[in-house]
Image 1: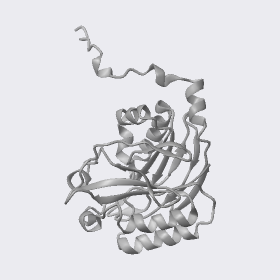
Image 2: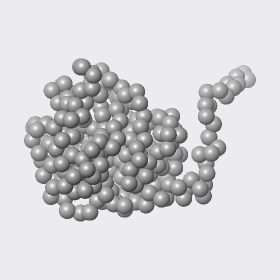
Image 3: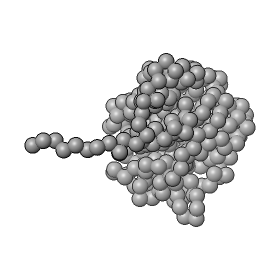
Image 4: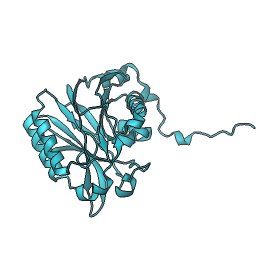
Length: 270
């Protein structure tokens, strides 16, 4: 199976409408075979362009999904559109990731549960999601988390319990914490015995440099492919069957406790 990671920039001087058309053209011009194409988090608005969130908000049948659904149909591939600012219920806004199937239909969606508040307006502007989902796809049981969710292993345990084998992670991870990006994508792949497909943004959004280095990590922690810090596509070969093989050969998931909060907390003697 071939996965294409599409690292995108969201320049401050570019409108959301122009960016959508530019990305559409870039996807149309990309001729390499790919069974799955993955885009970053909130690339259309630019993650750090917080003042634009309200104006950029759209529904799941809005322009971003419609335009990229046509691309998925034309290419006959799965297309993970990254995430959009979704106008969900009334004025509620969410950071929602969407996977389209080769017919352009929504195969999976996920609203980011851990919205980010450190030097970020995301937690103030967007409502956290409340649900996890795992979808059956042609390449296996697939789920998503978004960017900051990488830091919360409990969420990932829930995904594995729900049957996840592949986890797609659209992100707008800053260059300043690139070491954490590499560490956490690897750790989540290993401790959950899943394939992690992580696509990061690049460029500078509202004064913040994004780190790029999109990557795919297998259940043994092997990095199957990693991009640099520039815009462009990186194609990675993966074997989804490695998840079942790894879990059979080294069945650590069977030894997890359901709830570690039930353990006794012993006082340390003075």
